[in-house]
Each structure stands twice: as C-alpha cells, then as structure tokens.
Image (cartoon, rainbow, N blue to C red; front, side, top):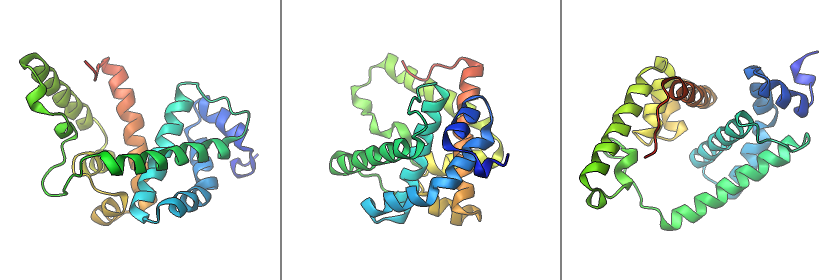
Amino acid sequence: MKKQHTTDAVLVTSYINGDESALSVLIERHKQKMYNFIYSKISDRDLTEDIFQDTFIKVIQTLKRGKYNEEGKFLPWVMRISHNLVIDHFRRSNRMPKFDNSGEFDIFSVISDSSLNAEKTIIKNQVVSDLRRLVEELPDDQKEVLVLRMYNDMSFKEISEKTGVSINTALGRMRYALINLRKVIDKHNVVLTN
C-alpha cells in the first residue's frame, strides 16, 4: 500500500514506531494548507516559513514523547499548534527585544550578564561550549542551516538563497539537524539547563 494513500492516523502511528519517512508524507500532504493558513494570519513569507518550521518541530517533539492522542485528527491538531505559535509571535513582537542582523547572533545575548554571578557565568559558558561542540558533530549540510538560523538569525528564505537550495530542503535540513542534535545530547547525557 502506497504511503500517499495511507490515512493520517496510520502515518502518525508508523512515524511513532520509527518510520521517519511517514512524517515526510504527512508534511507533504498538509504543507500547502498549513502554509496558507499561517500566511493568512501573518502576511509575511519569511515569518510564515519560520512558524511552519516551528510547528513541525513541536509536532515531532510531541510525537517523540508519546504525547499525541488526537484519535486520527492530525490536521486540526497541527493547525491548533500553528495557531498558538502565531499568537505567541504577536505577543512576542510587542514585548521582545529586537535583534539587529549585524554581527553574529548569540542565543545567550538575551540574558543580562550583569545579573549573573561568577558561578552562573561559568555554567553559562560551559553550556555554550557544550552546545557548540555538539553542533560540530552534525553533518555539514545540517550544521550549516542550524548555524545560519540560530547564530546568524537568518530566515529560511535567506538560508535558501545563501546555500543555493530550496526553502523546503533548508527546512528539512533544519528538522534533521534538530532530531540529530537531540540524539547527540541523549548519547552524551548532556544537561543543557542548570
């Protein structure tokens, strides 16, 4: 039976049972509807790509943790996740500090160093170096997308133009980079929180 004709519920079960390709079929099946839904709320293509990507990161995390129990209603569930992320975006855009794109983006720049005592500074620096070391273990194509997104704060459209691949390929590489990073973190028993 071809995966293209399989129901969402069967594909979700296949993915949970370890068939990574089942998720690709689900994403392919629903991406246009999802993209149009997010774009209708935001009207910004780069941001739509980012929220689309973040939606599927949440989907993957939820499925991997075995927290999915939507009784086969996959699309409405995914739409709810993306809707919540859109709301989060609007909340953040009113309050969050804006980052300029000059220089390297450092994910820890949002932490005020003045509030860190010596011990916390050491822990923070250790986490940064652990994370950078783990990123180095990723395949080059995944590492490139992850670094451009997380450290250079580039949109997936910008990453696509810089690397010469389609936006979907860039999204896929980011998705696999995060999956592999999680595996590496588990393998090394790294604790990224203090």
